[in-house]
Amino acid sequence: MQLTTEELDGGIMRITLDGRLDIEGAQKIDLKMNVIAGSAQRLILDLSGVTFLGSMGLRSIVVPAQAIKRRGGKMILFKPSPMVNEVLRAANIPTLVPVCHDMETALAALA
Image (cartoon, rainbow, N blue to C red; front, top):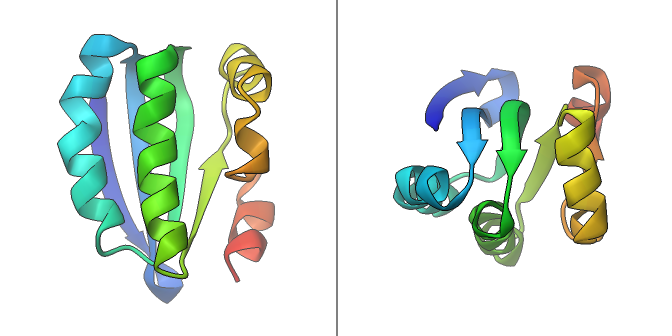
């Protein structure tokens, strides 16, 4: 699992994940995600490169999202593949963290 960050206009942080978000992948990104969640106010988590999403991967998404929300911020899940989107829906994650499939919608949701 690879994690890259990019600062977008308006103070929005974009995190791009690439690979399998299974137990091993979650272990690789958990610390970085929690550090970013400690300071980010508006975050886009780009899941377009995630090829597998397991239960530990779900945790790696939900815990930082909750931390950001507690501080009054917002996090968006961006462009998950159909398989990843199905896992998110089965786990009812979109009720906690919005899912957007295009950048215009994602940016509007963070406004």
